[in-house]
Length: 191
Image 1 (cartoon, rainbow, N blue to C red):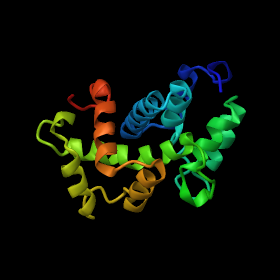
Image 2: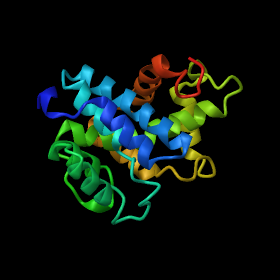
Image 3: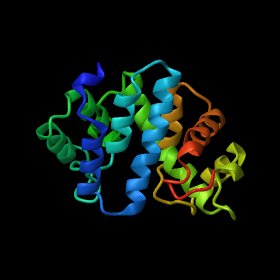
């Protein structure tokens, strides 16, 4: 898909901010956007497409948090706003209950990046300096085993995501940390 079919990032940013008022959820969109762009670059894919899916993947969550509505209702909004079906379907695919096959790299990437990126950020925020430099794959994997930490993160989705992407958990954690470091300031983290 060429960039000319995508609306400008500014439009995606405006939609995210129109529908998402929680600053943490906005930062989550920015974090997943950064990781998705890095995945695209590593695989010689379109970083604008991957980034847009990352930025918008949860834009409708505050309005439609229920399974069966989240991403479905948002998809209707994005379609009305002129976003291409490729973006809408990839976003819908990151919710397992939607039962949309994750056949392509874009769908596998958003599923893998969503939960684990949020988890890496949560681990970073409990470190003394709130610095990504303090986060090692081993410490993230240890926190994953602690079911009391970041209870909202679906551990099964984390493991299924890295398996679907065909990567090792520790190497993907390191990849996420490195993808987030250049964006640490806007995410409220230290590099």
